[in-house]
Image (cartoon, rainbow, N blue to C red):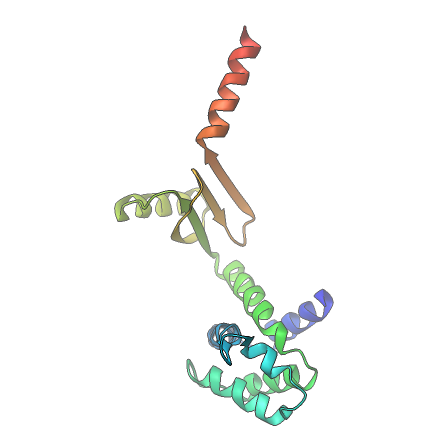
Length: 184
């Protein structure tokens, strides 16, 4: 399946200009979100319903096009892409395509999303300083998103740059004890 995703992504990147790619990213994001919505008494997600052989390919394509049109006008290439995905029963690839396309565009624009997991909320000034500092350090544009975590640690993940840094009090004190015992 990985090879199929890479082929679709390569075709998309080769066929669309940057403005079209940004619009396609927004449209695929809307479809991806909608595919995860639970319907029919919370028992089935929309994606499972669209996998049904009882729904015609035309109706599936129409529904996906309508979901995409809700956020941005769908051009002929976008319609063709959705038709192709429906025709080959690859609707389930849309969320993965969306995520991979988002990462590729981030790479091209040198604009990345950073996730900062903390046990408690930080103030806006602190978040801005962290964002600016990391942007300067890595020479990229960063959008820092804070997430509150139940863990007693601070974790920073910069998607697309494969950077993950964490700091845990427990680990710090364990390392300090080990270091002190080795010094004795």
